[in-house]
Length: 117
Image (cartoon, rainbow, N blue to C red; front, side):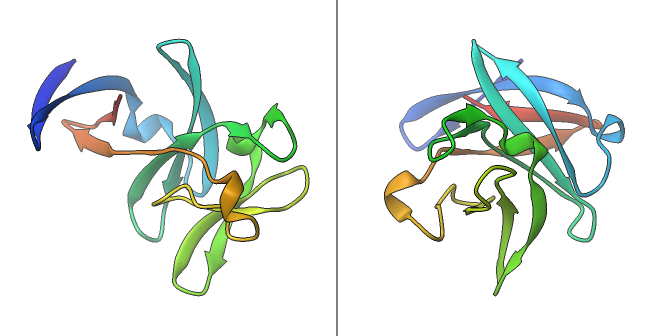
C-alpha cells in the first residue's frame, strides 16, 4: 500500500491484483476493507475501472458479472439482473440516477492494480 495526498485529504491505495491477471472486457470482484468492489479491464482503452459491486436496483452483488459496452461516449457496465447501465467512470446509473453507485480511482503501478479507498 502507498499513500497519495489528494486535495487536503490522504488517499489510501490498496493493491488488488496484477493487471495481467485481468481478462479484457470482463469484470472480477475484489473484497476491499469488507466491501465488494467490481474491477473491470477495458481492453480497447487499456484502462482499469472500479465501482461498487452492489446493484442497488437488483439488490445483489452482481455488477462484476455485467456486460461492458458504451452508451454514446460513456463506457458502462449493464447489470446482469435488470440491465441498467452504470457509468464506469462516475458510477452514475444512466436509467435511474438516484440509484448511482460509487466509482473508485484506479491506478496501475509496476503492473499492479491499485484502488483508492
